[in-house]
Image (tube, rainbow, N blue to C red; front, top):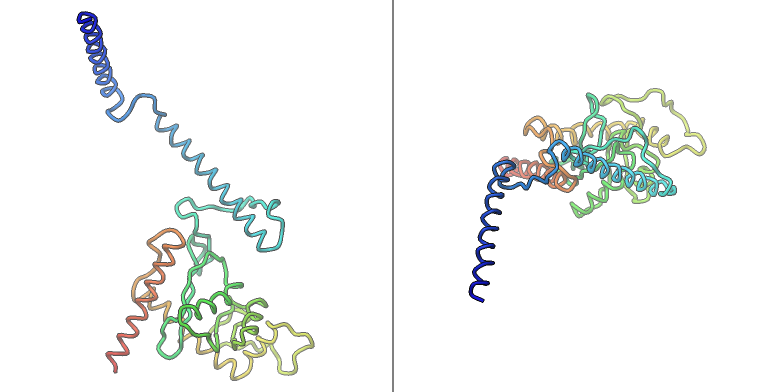
Length: 272
């Protein structure tokens, strides 16, 4: 039994020695953290790229289904168009039209009160335009400031039957530009006289802004909300988001807006 026990012990030591030698040889050939069975780096990159493309296609298909649900269509038949795009760096961002072309990013919104230029509502969306965003912005103002606005003055980007109907339902006086125009410019094509029978909300709003009161109220917009954007961009150098993902971007924008309000409050205290 003693001799039999010694024999396998020697064989084990010999096998372990051979294994250690093989390990040293493989470490020398492949590296200490590799076994030699791994995929080549070039193939791994291609497999990873294929996997990410598949994930992107699934995300675009789900986005198309969600859009179909909003429009009351069958989501199972919805498919992304051939021109639908996906950003791999920040999938939650969108392609948006800017003053000098198109950018990949998010759309920011502000609501500013007229007395001290405090921001009373702010939000970040993925929407390409504001045609359906005014009601949501009003709800944001109520949530963040604790008060429902009595009057809102917004540019033509928010002009739509749906937005104007939302203001009417909430009994909020609206002064909404019906088309893009220069500040203080009035549309002379709207001749005086009674509105046609069955005029739309947009047509009634257009006539409203032709009155002296309507034009005067809307003209104040340029000195209320525009400075809030300008001061953040020009004075504080905030030209782009540093974070990625909708939730993180919302937090970053909230911080920018809070900084604006603190500086405004500080100025009031110093003047007082």
